[in-house]
Length: 314
Length: 272
Image (cartoon, rainbow over all chains, first blue to last red; front, side):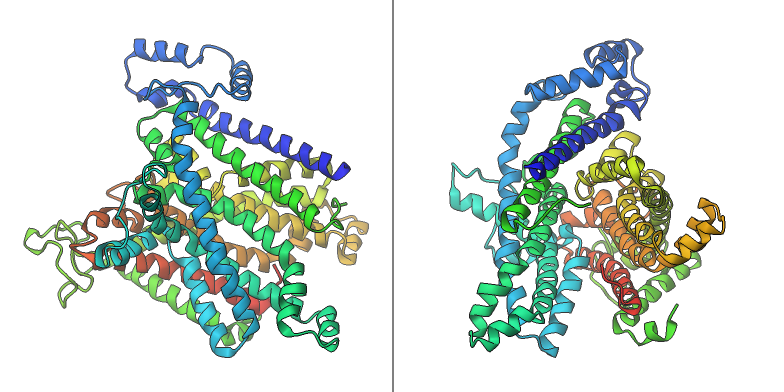
């Protein structure tokens, strides 16, 4: 029980810090946020008016407190540009980013896990060289450039997928899948490289353990040793990596959504920077950061579920 | 440095060669490029690679090879400067947290964890959206993005080494904390810090490309590979080489530094 309480306390304190940082960056660092919105040489009257609408006439601590109070009660504020509640806008855009992230993570696991296992089992000179070439390239390629190449090959040459745009799932599920496939793949490639490399190293470490020798001398087949024993013991390290990959995927989706003109949160984020829509921007950043914090929390809890031996550090 | 070991490491050699070639391009570009990077030639728009234009020309008829060469300057300067910022701040935070520990450590590490909640280039995007795009702001934003990685490595190094007998002996001799940090512990954790520096260098190059692609990074007239990719995107069908070559150069530089880092890590036999 103490384990879960401590993790919950960490979660809350991190969320608090994340909100303070977001507030500092968008409200305190610029000096005058209204000037960010309207530009340096804006009309003084307009500036004064906007300061009032944004509540900038109040002291920062009071502004922070009311922002948090509003956010907790579900009032995310009003977008300056769209003149609509930020919550509504986010609700519209979230499914796109969510579908993209889930598909991308799915592709990472579907491609990465079997390849990692295969390569660990056939650990030969040729395959490991090929593997290092692939993983090193996968880690070095900018995901948006990968997106260009995929568009060039699969959309332009083979005409299998659309070059850009998004089709909602409820309109045309096949079209939605097609419109998200290339972006997900571009986003998944670094993750695939990470997971193959990591899984192979973990599995090879496990293969040298005593329990594997015991299992072999018992006469168990290699296959059941791999799937029944080794993989189970590799779950924790793999889970750590998957947790990190989810955050990376969310971060990467900002750029990839813009390459494919997908109307998701990342696209909205860049648009809101272009239109200097500070309330929207601030909420979006907080929103994304809190999703990451929550995912890390879930991963921490899952460790304990998978391996009850895990205790708090110190 | 165990130089002999490094020179026998294949990764180190390949990475080193890649970086050496790019460094060579950068140094050359300081006083010579085949064409002026901004010279337009309307008669030669989107020309494919050929003897007079190795990498072809862009939509204004500018020589892509010359622009790539000039772009190496931006990449190296941004990489070095942002790693330096991240290293100095991260090392400071890591040293304080790791050496003194206690509540200070607790608070500093919470802050670092909170920074890591802004995934990928989001932290840099936040800062650039407030301070505005541009060369200097990009460097600062990417530098801050690198702080958590350095802080964590430095912290674990300090925690590990402060328990060692030679450090305890120095304390018993009456050495001050600053002296112990800089003279006794720091020299022992340089290798993980060097490895992290090469990795963060790659991270900065990738992040700069992403930021500039989004229009939030380096602005004209400063050259940038990321912005070249943005400019190349509309001509992806008419001039695929433009997109291909520019991205390949970014990949080569990132790959070079990653391999260099892996090679050094192997050389020191560091476990992550």
